Length: 431
Image (cartoon, rainbow, N blue to C red; front, side):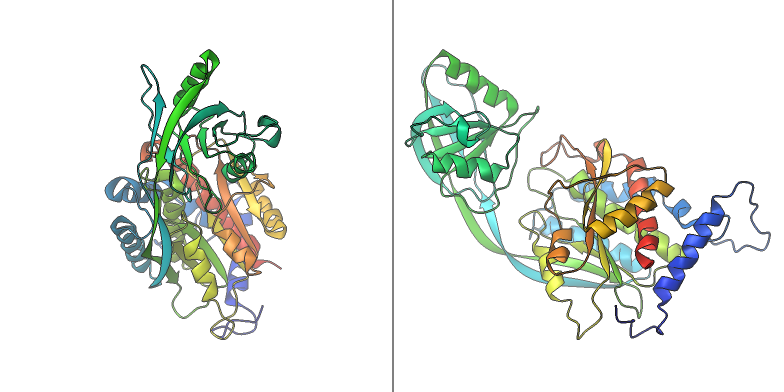
């Protein structure tokens, strides 16, 4: 990469992180005593590693502010703007030059659909639309079609009937596509785990597609075992133009050689504590640690708006990275859903996965490099030819629900994510 215009040919970022790696190795030695002349301000030294400054409780305070004080943060909403102001304020407090970068997006407004069983003693159902579902009104027979695989549909097709499909194995879009190809007039997908279901399609459907909780879906399955069911489905969809924003924090007079990113918007259904106040909170904690230790050179922080509707924030940000303005970043680290789950997972550019896996070993962590495809802001960078990686924790049963609250986020996991990223930054600075 072309050296920064603010630095000599030997990048301050590479030299600085090489020093950090040496310090971290020395800090691992037993019995090292702190120097009596050490500064009272915590700094990177043989007796105080950079990672030791990361504090999970400090990060958890940001989760509380974003998820509980502000609450649900849908793209383009007032709460999303409040969250942007909160993040910008704290980055400025840590000494970064902040910029709020606005952009426009097409936002699909979800209406309240209905699903009624026609007959005596109908159950009460609370359907939700899958995002990007088209609207429509259908009265037809409900047909159980397993997981929505091609072989799960009747050989003769559905011929205008409504498919009842269980979540699992296939994406929501694939299930809807298969049902459409079989001639379905609408699709109802129910959860395969306890609780309600909220999901996204990859593109707008041509037939209505709703979701139900596991309990509601199983109840319909039980009724179908007793005989045919006719249901009435009504759904509306709409689109409006909204304004969202990215929050950018840059070190004073320095380029963005590595970007640490996280989206701060949430779905409308819940407060988004894990998805993704956890990633935004960890981003702020990393920024605090680098400022506290004086090691912020070369690292920029970007909190992305409007990730949930389709990566709008990161896509817009990448379009502003022109070679005429500054060298392209050498890497991007994306923090998304890092406060809940049983295991760490790494997804993205293979070279970065290998380097960050080495950093994890230094912390005694054992992340699972995976080929699982999860949409996230790192993909916007990879599509632009910039190496990127997603640090993620698998799996959250409260994903995209009203139960994604701060009480389920673990401060220790936020601290682990911060430490892993700090060590990853050191690895990314090495050739």
